[in-house]
Amino acid sequence: MADTMGHSATATRNTSVALGFCLLAIAPQIFEFIWSIGTIFGWGAGRGPATVLISHATALVAGAPAALIGSVGGETKKASSDVLLALIYSYPILAVAILTLFMTIRSAQDYVGGVILMALALFALWASSDLQGMRGFSFGAGTAPRMFGGLLVALSAGIALTGLLTDGPAMAHYSWRGPLFVMASIVFFALAIRPLGLVVSAFVSFMIAAMGSHETRWLEAAIVGACLTLGCALLFPYVLGLPMPMFPRFLIQ
Image (cartoon, rainbow, N blue to C red; front, side):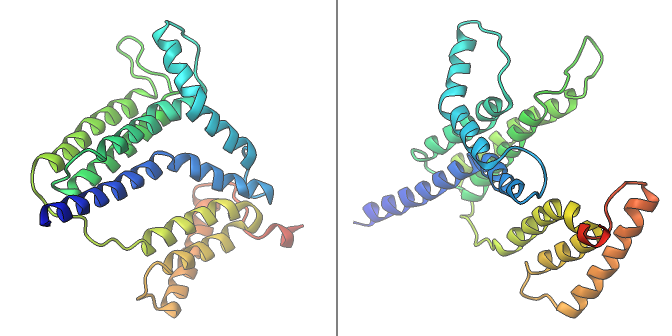
C-alpha cells in the first residue's frame, strides 16, 4: 500500500513537472502572441495575433517535421525563423518533457534547474542562428553566442543528470508574485514607451514592479520611482543621446 501511494505521488509530481516543461517549450510563442495583441491597439509593431498563432502552429505541426525530413533527404532550403524556433528550442524541451514522465527524479531542484538553464541556452542558440559564424580564423557575430550557448547546454544537461542520479532536495515553495510583476512592468514599458513617453512609462513601470512585494512602502516607492524617472529622463536623451519620446503623445500633438 505504501509503495503504491509513493509511486502514485511520484507519478503525479512527474506529470506536473512534464506539463511545466511543455509550457516552457512554447513560452516564446506564447510571449510573441501576447505581445502581438498590443499591435491591435497600436502599441508597438510586428505581426498581428492571427498571423503569429497560425505561423507558430504551422511551424510546430508541419514546418519543423518537414524541415527534418528535408534535411535527411539532403535539402538545403533555409528554414524560417518560426521553424528554427521549433527545431532548436521547442522540440528538445518537449522531448525532455516526455522523458520526464518515465524518469525517477531524485533531486527535483537540480533536475528542473538544469532543464530551465538548458532552455535558456537553446533560446540563445536560436536567437543567434541568423548571425554570421566563423570564416576561417575570424570570429563572426554569432560565434560567441553559439559557443557559450553550446557550453551552457552541456553544463545544464550535466546538472539535470545529477538530479536523476543523486539524492537532493525537493522543489521548494516558489513565489510567483515577484517575477510576475517584474515581467509585467517590463512588458508595460516596452508597449507604453512610444504612446506615453519615457517619463510616464518609467514611473508606472517602477510602481508595477514594486507591487511584486507585500513589504512595499508606497510613499518610499513613489519617491524612489520619481528619482529613477528623473535619472532616466536625463540619462537617455541628454547623456546617451538617444531620441526617446519624453511625454505622452497626446500632450505633444
